[in-house]
Length: 38
Image (cartoon, rainbow, N blue to C red; front, side, top):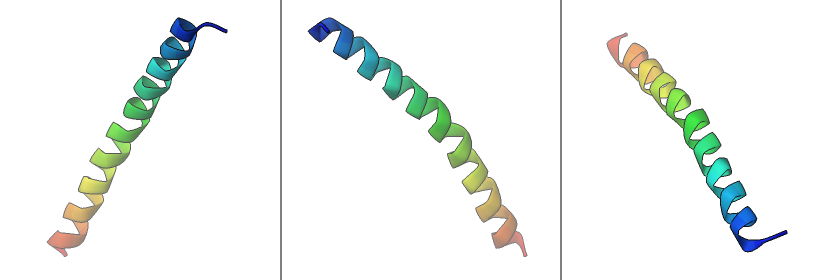
């Protein structure tokens, strides 16, 4: 296990978290708007 390997894995994890977080944030905003419109 090398330090560069660790950096690479952390980079992949960060990208995965971003990819998962963005749609959930958009969905949360959509739900908030739906609730606010009622």
